[in-house]
Image 1 (tube, rainbow, N blue to C red):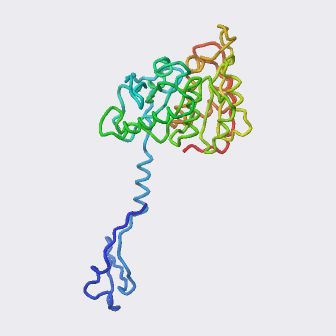
Image 2: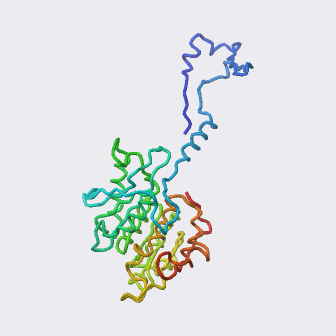
Length: 332
C-alpha cells in the first residue's frame, strides 16, 4: 500500500492564494528546471511513495532465504542437534533445532512438525529427526497424533509465539508461513489433516500412512503438495494407494514406495520403513518444498528420478514412485 503524506490546503493557501487565479505554484526540480501549476487548478498537495522504491522494498523482502546444511538427503547434514524436552502447547513435545541457529535476519529456518505413530512417543524416531535437523530444519515432535490435525496446529501456534517472542532460541529465526508436516502411521494422518486445515502448512509427507477413508487427499482444493512414502509389504499400503488414486485428487501429489526389502516377517519393506530406511525421501521432499530447492522436483517427477526408480542408498532394493497433477503447479 502506498504511503501518502498530505499537506492541508487551508495552511497552504492561508494567504488567499487559493482564490487568486493569477498565482502559480512553482516546483523547482533537482536538475534546475521549473514546473508551474495554476493555484486555481490545485486541490491538494501530497507526497506519494515512489513505485520504484516500493518495488525495491518488495525485492528486499523477497531475498529471505532458508537456512540449509549439506546437500545430500541420503546422509546427515552438518548441523549438530539440540533438543528441548517437555515443551510445546501441552508441555510434552520435543523441540529439536540446529545448535548454531542463523544470526542473519535474511536467512531463517524452515519448520517441520513431526507426528509419531500410534502409541509412539517423542524421541522414538531419532534417525529421522537427526536427519532433518542436521539439514537445518527446526523439528517439533508431537506428544501424540490423534489424527485430526489439531495437535499439529496447536504446535504451530506455539512455535509462532516463540518466533514472535523478544528473546529465546527461536526468536525471529523461523519461517512460519511455509511449514511442512510429516509423521509415521497415525502421525501421517495428523500431518494430512493439518495440511488440509491450516494455511500455514505448505506441504505434507506421510510415512507409512494413508487416509483410512481414502478421501482426504481429494479434499485439497488449494493446490498444496503432498507425498506418501510407504512400504511394499506394510499394512498401510492399501490406504496409501487408495488415498493417492482417488479420482478426485487434483492437488500435486507423489506416491513413493520402498521395494525389494528384506523378508523380516512382513515380506519386504513394511510398516516401519518410511522413517528408517526411507527417511531420505522425506528429507529431500522438505528441502524441495520448505527449502525452496526447485531442482529436486525431477527426483520425484521424472522416470529416472531417484525416488521414482533409483536405488535405495545404504540398503537393498529400489524406489518405485508415481506422480500426478504437476503440470500447472507453480511454487509460491
